[in-house]
Image (cartoon, rainbow, N blue to C red; front, side, top):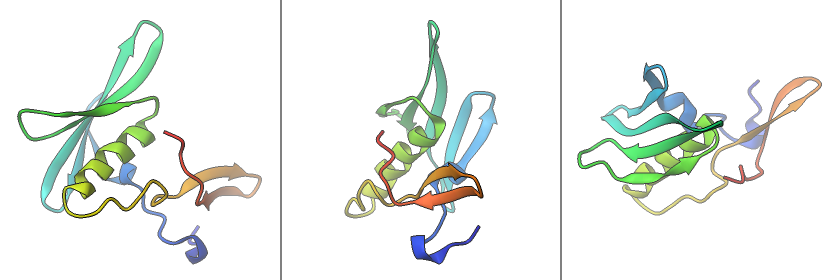
Length: 108
């Protein structure tokens, strides 16, 4: 679905390459810039985002892969200029017709 009223439908999750099960490398045309790793603590599952360069810097923890990739990408973008804000990526809601982009915040 390409609905230009909502702007581009690209999301940082598309920059995540699963290097091994539970480990995603965030990549750009210039190389790898962040690492997102699946973590389990007891019955809880979450994701830890860090920078790629050594020494790695913790960016934060999130409950979803989508949110962790967004966190890692926003940190990388902030390194290149002003922060574009929390509502820069579309949030998809499931409707009867299928996925539909929305401009609501992800609430990470």
